[in-house]
Image (tube, rainbow, N blue to C red; front, side, top):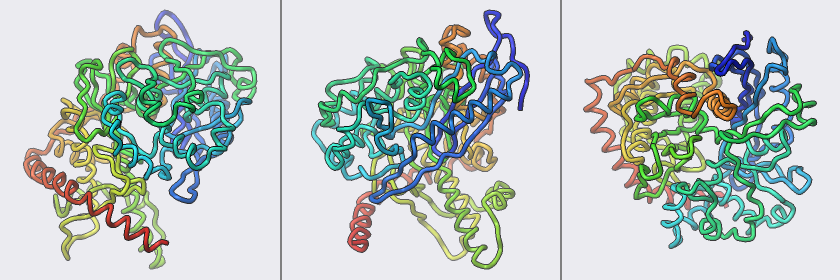
Length: 531
């Protein structure tokens, strides 16, 4: 949709464009200076799988698609490129996007879905230095992270690193193409290679990863809340924007989505869950001293753009992927019988039928990802399972168990951050489901609110740009203006379900702790059969 640019704070007029380059879609979204979304454009991202669990993406195409979305958005603006006061970019986290001295891709990007370093991550976690590394970064180690990717390349593909000058992430790559600046943001730098207390790289962490010689690949840290760089002439030609337009390097997508989705509220006691392909569960902490590290040494401490606060995060590898799996099973059976149905057809009455199904007809552990699990525990061999099935268990009983399993996984994650927040703001694809909201509220025993914003990630990136431009004194003020007016009514816990879910959650956690050795045994059996 298109609309008029507005007059914002300090008498300024114009729009801010937020770019959100996700795993499946890259979007550019234009916002007025008071946070109204007025135009957007999107292109699908495509990635492919390679041997040994690798997942890759074409870096050049990602840039071309991003440039195309920017050009399309600019064409929709009444004031055109002249009305754009700033552009900010966020994108999928983790992964490794290598460029050479000339700024050209060395190889396809390794995405956060890439699992080929799983065994190496397990090896590093078992090392004597791992506890200190975790205490420094505040973040658990897993196969998705750039540090593990680089070590894997060093051991098995050294020629890639020899040809590389800089190791970037997705949003960093786009920022480089927009401005010519090689940089990363404080969040990606610190949870992978740094110290969340100093908000900088840590030599100890880098050396303990075995990457002392690869330190040269790490770019400078640029904080988008305080600095920007100018859009290059080449990028202006590609995007239709005006040369010299300020470009802001946003924080990683999960942080920007949290900011745009209501994590920063006036009380400082909210949480934010993103139930998209993956599940992210964030608790706001005011400063480094408020961080609660857990015994399993999992999760992330991701810095927020105010110089002191952070999001303490636990992340499930798969959230709506579990729902998609169930829907695809049903569609596949129907197709075999000559009936063509898609996911959207089955979703239309899903809420009603799930809420009519029996609570806790089975327990489901939602570890459907081939990469295993990373929160609130780390195990590359973790796999999904139903427990308690019986002969009268129907499809919607199983689907309800899947939604309950996502709720239990959320609670498992929040408790690992130290506590379940006072209330949780929910975003992501599953936030549209009445059944998911009610079940999650009842499992957590907390009200669930959604934020009526279509593009929370792009909005969060744009809010950082608004602070950098001086429109707001800090990200808290930006959140109060952009987000709080959009917070919807609460989905309250069902008092009749809360005690049942409390008991079921205790059993859910007991089962996943006892099953962990079985997953490794199953993986060994599978590997012998495959060879």
